[in-house]
Length: 435
Image (cartoon, rainbow, N blue to C red):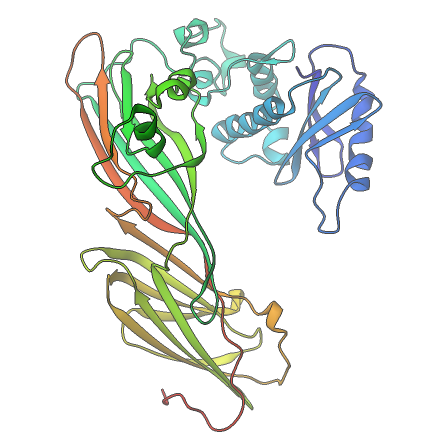
């Protein structure tokens, strides 16, 4: 339970304060900034939970404001930190951006939200769509207070009753982001998959959905054999609508969904992956100039295509007079990023592309190899997953018995996808062909 919630500016001055329990003096917030400064590490980061004189300070920073919860009880820190994240999400839904100016412009609505989202320091309603049904930007001007939607008093607090659509549809996206770091010689130093299942639900009534995946643990627990590849997911996190007891007992993902768009679950897979897009590079540094050759190769099946590929290659800060030549796509120098950006709208699997770049270099320097930024790669491959995860079924049951259309789509894209560059070659004449 939270004793009080504060919103502070970057200097620690309170913008908003809401006292729920009265067991901690409001002046206790004066110790927050000194504690934060005392416990910062060398990189300027601090722990989200701090304790002094029996008072626990839990905080979250968003742009130029701090969201801070104070508690004197032996509270569940993760619950309150999660509440602060939900508070940030709700404010962003209402004000589009969460910053000091938007807080100062919306005192009335913020106090209304704080009163509805917590009761005596206990988190209550945190779904933005439900709150927006009866707390609006103009709610303090209304003469008659609107009746709260049924979702507030229902067991299903994330969905209102009486929703109706002429056409009932469900759209499900399996989105996997690849995090990868590769050495200049092509050895994968680290790799993982961050996955998310995102849904858009346009269903009438109060439907029950059941989702089946090719989950390795489920197959093993039921003694069944998977016909194809089974996937072992780690660090699974669900939306609050999922019945966790059902999942823990038989790995069934059963839920009554919110209306509209939401993220059903996230997961992670640690796997030794091969790079989907290789970016081998050669750098030659000479007096007054530096030259680059980058070879990109799509190492996935020929029937797949990567869309909107961007290869961002770093260059020295004072590089000038760029010249480019490429076999595919377009190249643009971005001096504000100290890089050039190679864009390929569609890159088919199994294909190769070559880029040559030449820059003038007015100064001579010895680069620190540890500070040389890597090449970054952005891409999106539709109808493709690296992990092999599959939606086996998506069942929709509603008491009225209507038929609904489920649509499933798979997407693989870059996460933190980086390819380290080799040390520049400096001796002898240029071995790269002229542009």
